[in-house]
Every structure is written in C-alpha cells, then in structure tokens.
Amino acid sequence: MLIHEDRLFPADPSARKVAKALYAHVRNLPLISPHGHTQASWFAGNEPFPDPSTLFVQPDHYVFRMLYSQGVPMDDMGIGQPKIKDPRKVWRIFASHYYLFRGTPTRIWLDFAFQELFGLTERLSEKTADLYFDTIAEKLNTPEFLPRALFERFNLEVLTTTDSPLDPLLHHQAIRESGWKGRILPTFRPDPVVDPEFPNFAASIAKLGEIEGEDTASWNGYLKALRKARARFKALGCTATDHGHPTAQTADLPASEAATLYSKVLAGKADAQQQELFRAQMLTEMAQMSMEDGFVMQIHPGSVRNHNRKLYERYGRDMGADIPRPTNYVDALRPLLDRFGNETGLTIILFMLDESTISRELAPLAGHYPCLRLGPPWWFHDSPEGMMRFREQATETAGFYNTVGFNDDTRAFLSIPARHDLARRVDCAFLGRLVAEHRLEEDEAFEVAHDLAYGLPKKAYRL
Image (tube, rainbow, N blue to C red; front, top):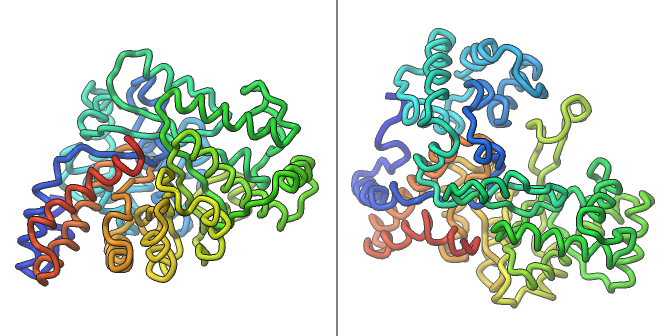
C-alpha cells in the first residue's frame, strides 16, 4: 500500500484511539470545497481528461515548481503549452523525480489519488512510470472518470471556481442548463480590475464597462459596473468574493479623494504608493458591496507574486514563483474595521502566509471582531505541520468557531479528496490529544470534528 491507514494520527496510544474514532465519524461526510481554481468548463463539457500529465503535472504548481527547483526546464514539463506534445515523456520526467516529494504534503495527496482512485500500490518511480501512465490513461477514458462522475464519487456537495469579473460565465450557465445536479458555483475575483499592477489594467476596466453597460471612465460608473458584475455572479449561485492583494492594507477615503485617485490610476499616472492606496480603498469598497449583496469576503495577502521575472515574462502569471513575506494585519485592516468591524451581517475570511501573525494578530482580531473569521492554513502551510501549528496557535484565542474549517484551494481536481482527508485527520489528531489530556470531553470533540469538516465551511460561505 502507498498510504497507511493510521497516517497522521498521534503516536500516543490513548490519543490515537480517540483520533481514529473521531475520524471514523467524519471521514465520509460530504466535501465542501468553497475556494478553489478548478475549471467550470470541465463539468460543462464533461469530456475525459486528456492524459495523466495534463491532469497531474501541468496544472499543479506544487508539482512543477519542485521539479523546476532541481533544474528540470519548464518546457520539458509541458508548462505553457496549450496541449502537451509528448505527455508520456513528461510523465517519465515526473516519475524519475518523484523522490523529490518525500516528506511533503504533495506526496501524501498524490499517493492518495494513485491508490484510492487508480488502485496503484507500487511506488511511482522511473521503473514504474509506464505502468502508472498506462493504468491512469486507460481509466481516464472510462465513464467512471469523467469530471461529473468524479465529482459525485468524491462526494462533493459544492465546488466553487474562481472567476474574473470579465468572465461571461458561459460554462456555469451551461452546467445549469444541462440539468445535472452538481453544484458548481463561481467566486468573484476582481483582482484584474482593482489591482493597477495587473497587465492591461485600463483595458480590462474598459471591457468591464462594455460588459455591464456602464461608463467606467468615471469613479461612480466603475463602482456601478462592479455592482452589476457581482449581481451577474450572484444569479449563478456565487456567495463569495476573493482578493489576492500583496498586503492587507485597507483605506477609507472620502468619495472625492477616491474619485481623484481612480482617475490617476486609470490614466497610468499613479506611483507605487498610490497604487497600493487604490487597492486598499477597493478592499473597503468591496466590503461595502458585501454589506449590500451578502457576499462573503476572502482576503489572502502576503505573497510576492511572480518573483522569478524571467519565468513571468516567458510563461505568465502563477508559475510557482510566488514567495511569502511578512504581513501586517492589525494596522492594515483598521480603516476597514473602523467602518465595518462590528457588523454581524458581514463575514470577512482572513488567510495568512506569515505564520508569525496567527497568535499575535489574527487570532486576537478574529476573537474580537464579529465580522472576522480565520481561513485555514493556505498554500505553503497547507500541510500536516502547518495545520497543526494553526490549531495550536489560533484555538487558544479564537477558539474553533472563529475559523471556517478547511478549503482545498486547488487547481488539481484529483487532489481534492486527498486534501480534505488530510485536514480531517490532522483535526482529529489535535482533538484526540485534547481529549487524552482531559482538556475536552469526548462528546464535545465529536461535535467539533463534524463542524470543522462540514458545518463551519458550509455556514461561513453561506452554502
């Protein structure tokens, strides 16, 4: 077997016994996946996934960034190619470097998929590369491995995509019109039209105006266009927005100052400080809009994106060259919280890449302001150690119920059940330890385990 049945449970026998019982209670609960980057087109068309490399290697920056770090060229992995020219060759490269993932969460996710979905029990290596490729490729061409069938097999109750305001959402509309009952919902990600550093920023805002029938050359027309875009998303089931800003900075400018700043940004005359101020103002504007339409707001700052300039220029965004940096929340969020922090009808979910802020800033903030909740360990901390550190640092101040359970944040569709399984095991391990140390009664631990796995994400994202 590639994975052990007792993986990630405590070594202490008494804590392990409780953890296993808790896990048995939650392991088969439906999956709530309210924050991810899979494609609605997969479920609209319901066509077979092309090949193992296109499914496992090309879309997953966790995979190709590790290989690139060891000198494997991006072109050799099919990155940046609309269609991989030689998928078997790419797979052999991946297999021959599989040892690089020892001790990483990626290894846990991949081994879970290989064993649980494809029945493979011998470790992936250069020697077994073709066995893996042929086994996976054969199964991908069966009805049981079509995207909709996998959605149902994974016991997914709801899956959200992440979409630009410029997206016409035709695939989401097609899913609805098809009569299929799977819940695939869009998430509103306005970064291309609120972050002046995005390529073609002014052109994107003009396009937004065309789509929504508003004059986005003016501040008021721009805000009206964003409200209309949100309403269009809401009509297709959207419940949340998502904001990937460099920092958590917010601002609350008078309307006249905001309009002047917008004109300068739109004309391309804003310096770096003014661009940051504009992003900060737009987080507050988005919070105001969430007060109106009920969308949950997600803020995940702290990444220096596209750090590798040569890769960015050659392949574009999101090529695995994003690096965490220190993040301030206490001062940065204050303008927004001064205005909306005490609103019980608003939910703002904060994510972190700077772990030093969890116990010092984030847990105290979420443990006080009614509108704040803590998102799960994300990206570089989506790991057994990261999850356990999060529970240890956040629970003492924010408790369990100012967090939102787990979300998988993945582009790799087949990793979804593996990631949720890992999170459930770690949470059960943490709860098992609390019970074994007589810090929590066992019946309470069963309730918390259920809430973390299912109840909290469903409630937080209004699903």
